Length: 338
Image (cartoon, rainbow, N blue to C red; front, top):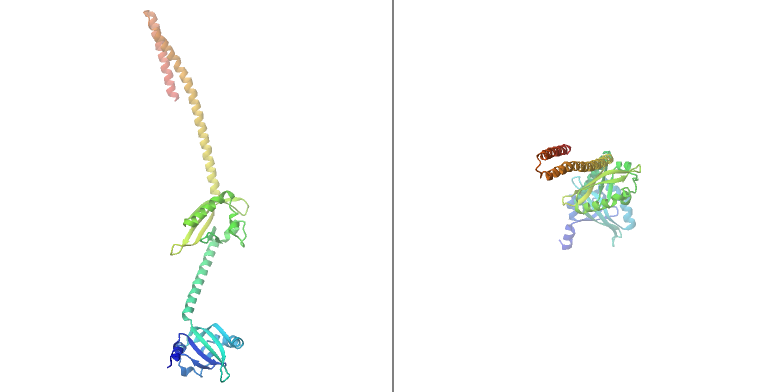
């Protein structure tokens, strides 16, 4: 067998030629092997459409034949070809129409590429896509029945999903919401901390949690606890942020009231302490005055005791005893008061 014939027969794609009516006049061994046929079964006995599924035959006759006649070629047409056992082989079909130089008869030269593996991969990708879409649908359905605000964001921080509860809670339309419109809901006093903390979490992958005031549908600012956690793939890369937004307004109001009550109690206690200090100062001043009087008497009497008069000495001793007893009573009263 000449080298060129050998290459034609065993080239890794199917090759065939047929007349305008579809009668096959040439086919290589590679295509025959795929079909499970022999040259004797095919050449001048089968038409090209005999090798196609029913749907393929209709498409060839209604679309491809007119296209070949008008354009003279077709490219990358997907067909299912019938194998000898009755199964199908997906294939890509490319063809050109030429005119035989001697017989002046149109002949179609076609190349068939087997795409079984490609179809398998396409089917797997389609199945994976359907599963992903179904998973997304289930997730969104679940989020929409939860009586809480649920949201997700892309790795760059852009919010890409909010559940139905979000639109009931906040004055934003379902269509056309953006990062700018979302940011406008937050109280101006919280903008700086919000942007700084969110950016830090995006860079580090840490969980986000912050209490903020957000404008509700009523127009009033309400306290919410906003949380977000990153979802990572097997490689440790963040693929999505899952977040929630919980109304904590009543809890926050009670907390603020408790703080205000505590501050008031501390202020009142401080005032009582100040009043006690003033009272103690007054008592201390009064008691010191009471102490100093008998003590001065005692000191004066002691100085007068340098006398030889027995009667005078007895009188001084009596007065000294009285002053000492008076001082003792003052000291006792001070201890009781303190």
